Image 1: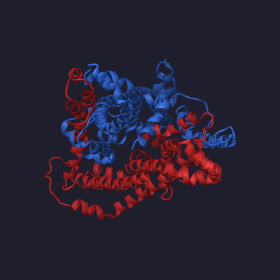
Image 2: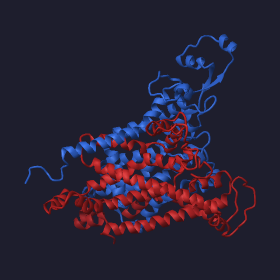
Image 3: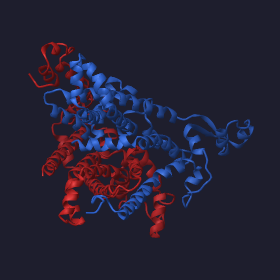
Image 4: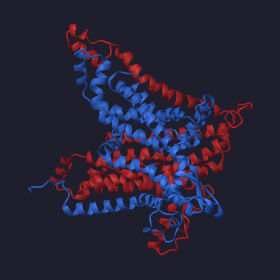
Length: 313
Length: 315
């Protein structure tokens, strides 16, 4: 018998597989790379034909993203004192002056508040429920679990109709609290499902030993189970956060001002005379980049999480 | 008394020790732990669902709150099921579902198979491939609109570069023939990694000794692929299809940003149509009936599918 394993692929098939996969990865990155490049183009560069891969980078897109500007006449422009900041200078070159900050900062902050708020709530409630489902006999546990998961099958628009009416009645429309509660309700099904899987893996003997040592259930849960489940909780939290961060349908239907998140806002960034693609791209870059960095940095836990949720049917 | 860890622990230990297990009873703790979740789901999922059912039998319009609400019985349901436009939306959805799942399974499985060859650096490249599915569909979909521009768009430029066509001679989003494919392309780009990851989990779950045994039996590589790899991955693949099917049946954000349902109603998936009825025409009662029909359809199809999936698993 040969010394190497029969299941080990040959070097040639490895090389072949590697080449194809890398090729696919590079192609799939093109749209994302293009978003980032476009953010650093000037508006004329962004719509040139043929599309420009090499260009002189400009911060105009980012300046336009964060400011609102007004066009002024030549005389008025000449009458102004010279620009004292680099961004003022970029804007002046287009015969405009900065009128004030844009709404992007607020919308981005809303995304952060609602994203982290709902993630925190989903994880707290989800961990408790998952622990109970994992460790206690709950009447109709399987039905309850299936019910919890099946709530995700509803199209968001279908859920949005009564939520819209309910929130209007309760005064929760376009509020941070309303969106946090809503995203928590959507996320909690997946959170319970994933977390139950993680907690099932922790041997019961640990807690039982703690109980015998005189811990109460709460103490055993808090001091024994939680530290053991930390990795699972963290990767579940990332999923909840990414969902809330990316969500669009509820946000566009239920928020319009104070609680509007970034996804419904970014596509509405309009420049002078048509869509301002560099500004849109700049907004998209700022919005998408944290998720990309997160994904690459935490890939070990994330990949496990995604498949884990699916494998544990 | 039910068998819980605590009773087991208690019965296994002398009474003096068991008495020291203090605090609330397990049953009380179980309800304290599950209670908030159930309450939240009841308040934000079930109560609204019941409300939708009730509204679906009325002619309520949410933009005219003061108006008197009339019960119309099953008329909303009748009108929807007899509406030929809605069947067109269903067809657009079916086209979208079928082709996205087809391409995602094909490419996703191939990629997973290749990655499972464990070439150097495969986990880094896997992560890069996964990136699109982690991003906001609305933001990304909006940007794809830019890539699809006839003259200046990168997509058109690349296609033109390889086919020799004029890049402004075709409009991915503007033409009736191409628009349904434009959404299939973006969805496939975005969600193939999901199918890939689940397939990869399936491939990695196959123990090596099965292949070793097949090798000893002198089964060819091709035969091993069809008699070991495919059947063992199938339950995983079917699960991936279920998830993608449910998600794409609900598809809203990506397509609404890309085409908004146009041109005409060629890409008007049921969710987009539903949004139009509920939040633009404000036919709340009618839209509620529509929502119930959609929900029952997904739920029904998914249940049948899960049954089939369990059969495959049992084999």
